[in-house]
Amino acid sequence: MQYLVMFLIALLITSIGFRKYIWFISIGYGFSVAAIGLAMIVFFRRYMSNLMLCICLLFFVYGVRLGGYLLIRELKLTTYNAAMKNEVKSDISLPAKFATWIFSALLYTLQVSPVLFRLSNGGTTDIVTLIGAVIMA
Figure (spheres, rainbow, N blue to C red):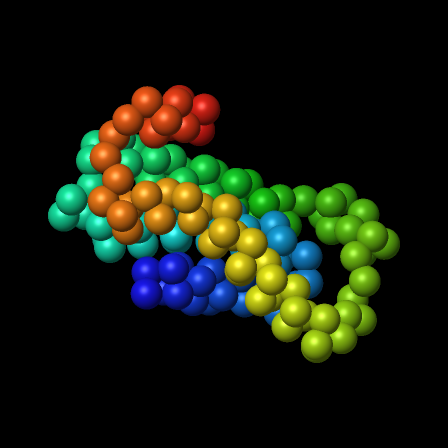
């Protein structure tokens, strides 16, 4: 059930790509990871260890930092937008957009699923979790 909710969150966030196709895999990615990190905190807050909380917060910080940077770049840098007009097609078909939307959301949820599954199974803090948190930080 929790995975389905995470997938729906990712679908909601990545839907921004219907406005501009490249946003499925840029802004949509960053903010999806951030939103999923927060959702995991909400779902598992009662029995989450401090280290797992730290990992979920790192997802949030990473996603907001990346998504924020990409959003600012999109909105502020005219040179970037001019360069991207030549690189990104604007005539993407609707079926292609839907496929990209669904598979992007699926990819983003699969990327964070190890933490979700660990939380779902009541995982405790161990050396592997600690190593993962250190690598993330």
